[in-house]
Image 1 (cartoon, rainbow, N blue to C red):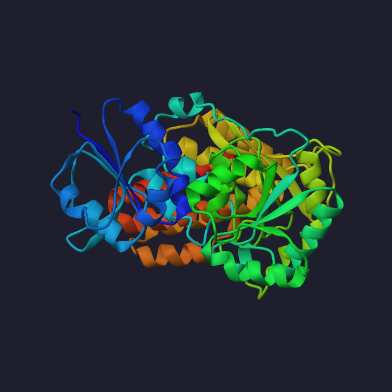
Image 2: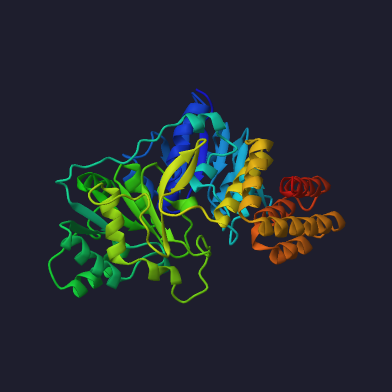
Length: 462
């Protein structure tokens, strides 16, 4: 038997579900190599019936893993115990973070890039599920993959799931919102069903107390496998950005994602094509942390507007294309050249989105998965939309280029990142991580300078 491949994914439920595409791709890219997965048993055990066919391991089985020789180890977890485990294993190749002899390192361009997104992800257009695979899975395999869209239920099915919670309160609507949404749905002939896990029980009780009438509820009463099965009876689910949203999308339930608060739909939106994302059109969308006590983007999400989007996405009243909701934008999940994409349905792409598209093309080119022509075209689109922004980025890159040329102090380069224009931080942030990861070696400095030089060339007016 060929050596197995180990994926270490010890983060939350949503992270594990977003690793499912990688598990499938590993079977295609490395035929004959068994795929093993180290995961939290509280998530892996109930999901095993819905997961690709892999062998799961949990805490207490590290000894067995350390006795095994692996073909490849992929660490997708940033927890210290995960990184220590990754650094202790016998393997032909390692991707991701690891700790060895007390030193923390990151192996792989794309994993360095992912680490650079911490508090710095505004212009990232790579989905976590794709970042799990880039650098490991050939781009051709990703491009050839066809993901099934959500199922269309008969018009007689009018049950709509409302998943109430999210990992942080800033990422979900209030109890008052859900109460008003219940009324809007019922007035239009829908049958709302409250959904949630153990963490949503208190919120669910508050919603039921405020609504003061009988409402169907399955909060806290369904395991993950039963939740997926129950979803087969629903016409759609309205949900904030949360792990059960990814489970719903994976199982074919149509999702309307209320992308609010410090979330970035390009990173964690419903992964399969054909789902709908409703998010703020504000310039701060995609933030890592909100600076306000209550995220201001919440104000734009009105229950009546949400139901209008729901009716259009179900084909029951109106169309999503061209639907105007001031302060909000409607997007559909899709694919472009094998990678996740969000297709604007209600508004034209803004300059900021073209900036993000440029950075996506830049990193694909920088890491050997995209062409120079594609990057030049994306830079041209950016200059056409916002020439002044492109000039600011060029000037900032030149300043960073000069600093990187004259110092071997990684702390000074990190300070340069902190002072860089927001539009330039994808480059300066990656540079800070790369230099730190390689102890500011001459090779790492040459690499950073080459990236800055490429960036200057792309933004130079033709």
